[in-house]
Image (tube, rainbow, N blue to C red):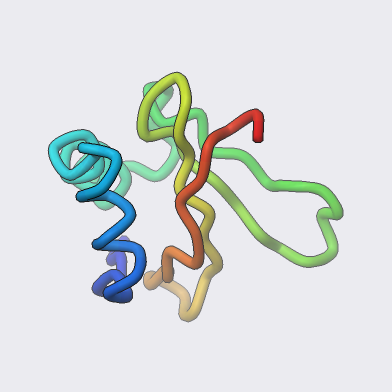
Length: 82
């Protein structure tokens, strides 16, 4: 699995919230095994939109979509219970 490069606004968000190291770790896990239990990868509601998320830590999640068979794009990073 390949995660496309982050948009500048998402990189800035990671930096602002001191999440760069956590994102790098979770990105490696995801690229090796998207179903890794430490990621808590899930399909979000409404399921027909096919938007997914994986955990960066207990508070933050990366929201993503599949852009190809083996490629995903992070479309947002936000607090899980916002």
